[in-house]
Amino acid sequence: MNIFQRRCAPWLAVVAASALAALPASAGEFKVRAQLAWGTDDMKPNDPALRELDPKIREKFRHLRWKNYFVVKSETVGVPQKDPKKIQLSEKCLIDVREKDAMVEVRIYSAKAGTAPSLVKTDSIAVQKLKDGHVFAFAGDTKEKWDDAWLVIVTAGE
Amino acid sequence: MKANFMSDRQLLEIMAYSDGELDAPRRHAVEKLIAEDPSAAALHQELTACANLLRAHEPLGTVPETREFYWSQIQRRIAAEEHAATRAKAPKAPALGWLRWLAPAIGVAALALVVTYQQRPGPTILAVGEASSMTFTSEADGVTISWIN
Image (cartoon, rainbow over all chains, first blue to last red; front, side):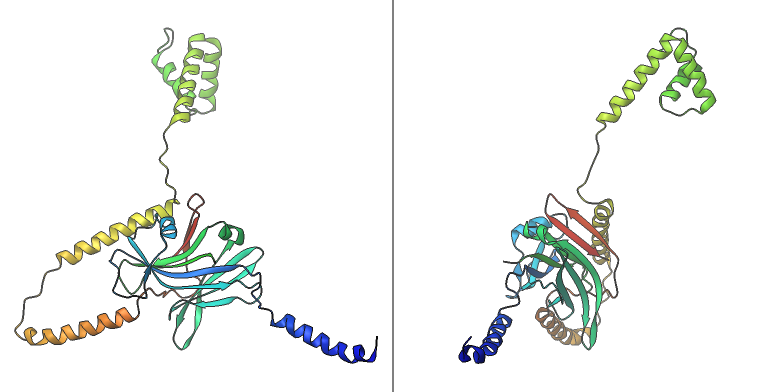
């Protein structure tokens, strides 16, 4: 090893380590799409932000009784294996996801301004099932409007 | 079929035996009768075959959902219809003179509410703490729904 190599080696190591660290953490990470949807018998409100739920997913909810499902917010994220990834779906609805033992763990929280989100429910679904097109959803009655429902739908991301 | 040499009581005992309804002493008595009387044995055989046939071909009504999920959906529909009926039957308050003046103000307030509501569309979740839920899974449809109560 000549003097140039001896002097440069530590710097080259630092540069290589920095380059590795700069790689996106999500490279090769499994992605999920989380959608907050609204189930109702009413017609679509005059709000361009709302769009109808994908018919393929809509068909999977045929066991539920509502006529229309509108997507309020949709977000695709990588599923980390360590710290859960938070997804704020509305002012009052927050979920986080993480991969654990080939399962995607989904936790749903009720959020309120000025207070820490409180955990409502935890559930898991196999990564392979999501990859195969399985749809997972948390759902419940809407408290704001009689007889409507909310759904947090988790599918494999693009 | 009624065997020639059997009394009505024996006939009933064989039927009860075939249905597994007898206690030990009566069961032994019928087993003895079947062993000794070919017509009793034939009747027992016929009844057993008939029961097996019915059991094997009994039509079963099945639903893809769990029982709790299926009934909760029905309960939800009934509640929705009852609510709609109650609203339809609610008596209208008599019109008051001052309401004519208040009506425009109410209209403006209602419009403001509608605008506010439309700015914040969508549902919210109000359950706090680990909520109770029931899960419906249909592998055929490729869906799992965790319904939070």
